Length: 156
Length: 156
DNA sequence: CCTCAAAGCAAAAAAGCTTTCCTCCAACCC
DNA sequence: GGGTTGGAGGAAAGCTTTTTTGCTTTGAGG
Image 1 (tube, chains in turn blue, brown, purple, yellow):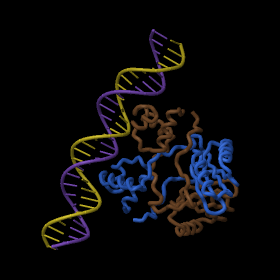
Image 2: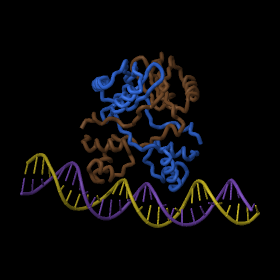
Image 3: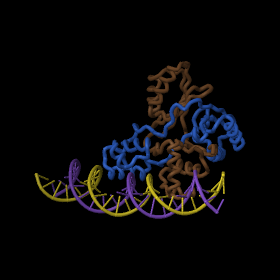
Image 4: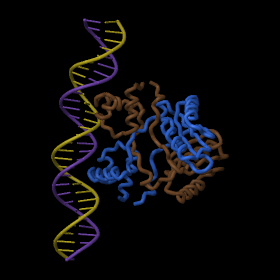
């Protein structure tokens, strides 16, 4: 139920590297394999660890370009929202989709090979759903990108 | 060196779930464990798989709020850029940092517990480095967020 | 039809995970 | 104080999975 300093160390280690053996993980946090295993087990069961995944190399897979797409719309019905969610979430090039407060209604993060492919993506998008205003911001450089969340705010 | 349809299936499976045993992974892609293992080995060696990590539950860890921070600056020297990169990348609440083209110079994705904590983060940021213009967009809803990249553009 | 290389398979060895059973320590009750 | 209970850690054994090794199959080129 609650998270102590050792649990935090385990979570920090696992979100940095999920390939660690229980023996090594235990060494890092000052436990032997068994109690370490029990804690990991509990952290997974209680949902602190949601999943373990492989992170792939975008450049090698030819999706090296990131574009942020800011969407504004005049449609605000629940039906339109559901339709929009369904359509956009189903596009594999869209890796993130947020509903925002303020000027921009939705922000998409899209990964594609190049600008030409972005144009194809863009056409596909506006053909599938009506949007009032779409503006694209191309990333020149990915200066930081991590799946590791800060653990300093965890309630013990 | 090159990626065939089976490799693609393996990558797709691993970026969805890295806990699969080689036997199960092999079953999914139509191989027995050994050739499957060899392919995974190769994919890791050649860098297609960069790392395996655990994805944690943000809500449970009290960092459920996402804020996008758009930064504009008048400083454009290489020194300032390096300083900015260093300062911002070192802040654990900043999970993504992109340099963009266009109006906005930099876009940060920041995860924190609540608006109060965001204010603390914001003060810390502007105290550490000089920025011309900072505007914050709060995420009302995370409609999609995945680490899985599309594999349809892979060069075979 | 033979040869060679690439890829697959099966079985054995190694490594790591999971279980079981103990011990230790601290809190609590009498 | 002395005994009891519960929670946490640890060692060893059993079991599963990964990794290695050596052999077989398949298919292309001569």
